[in-house]
Length: 177
Image 1: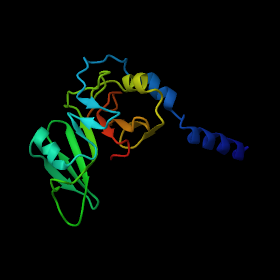
Image 2: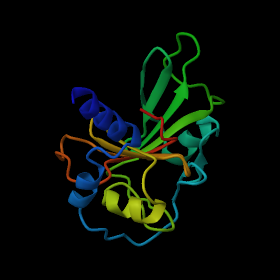
Image 3: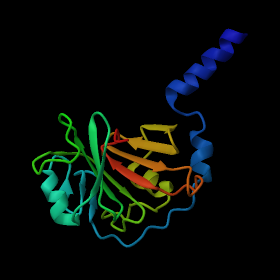
C-alpha cells in the first residue's frame, strides 16, 4: 500500500501537476495593459537591449547601475526595475563594457510590456493565456512558472506582495536567479 502511494506521489511530482491547477485557479483575472512592445520575450530583449548584447548597451539605455557580485555573476540594478547579469571574470566587481548580458530581469516598477501586453505587474494568468501551460511550475522564493519557448521565467514573490498572483519578475532566460 505504501509503495502505491509513493508511486502516485512520484508520478504527480514528475508530471509537474502537484498544486498547478489549484494555483492557476487562484490567479487574478487577466486584464492586460496597452501594448508598447518594449519587452520582447521571444527575442530576449528589454527596451532594445538583448541577451548577449555588450553591457555598455544597457548603460546607454538606462544609465549607471548599482552592482553586486556572487562568485560567478555580477548583477546590476538600473533602479527602474531592470536588472542585468553578466558572467563574472576573476575578482572584478563591475562589468566591462564588452561583457555580454547573460540575464535580463524586469520587475515592478518597470512599465514596459510585450506586443501582447505582458509585463511585470500583470496576472500570471495573462502569461498562461498568451504562452500556454508552463513547462514547469514550482516554488522557489515564490511561485514560479517557466516556459522553454520563449525561454522565460515568471515569479510571484512571497514578499512584499505575499503571493498575489501577479508577475513580480519576468526573467530571460528562465534560468535566471
